[in-house]
Image (tube, rainbow, N blue to C red; front, side, top):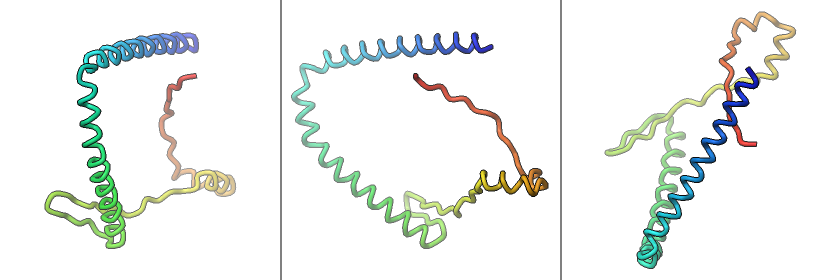
Length: 124
């Protein structure tokens, strides 16, 4: 089983390498096509990016103000086009502490559920 997984991992790495080569080819071709209009695009960026940054800063400020006000108000609020949805705080438990407590009080184990294992694939 382990050898089969190793083989699949190697196949995945090869497919990802092929995708990266394709991405680099695309980027090179894309740059070649855009080269004749590069100066116009730079001028457009110089004009529009500061405006975009300003409006994005306003959006961030308004978003934080709305969230703070809605948290304080404690209820959802509906505007003409948007909705600020209030949710009560989530409950978290100290799993390590409860595991230790369970040693002395095994009856609480009936309230424990263990989910399915998960797998993440990472690059070495």
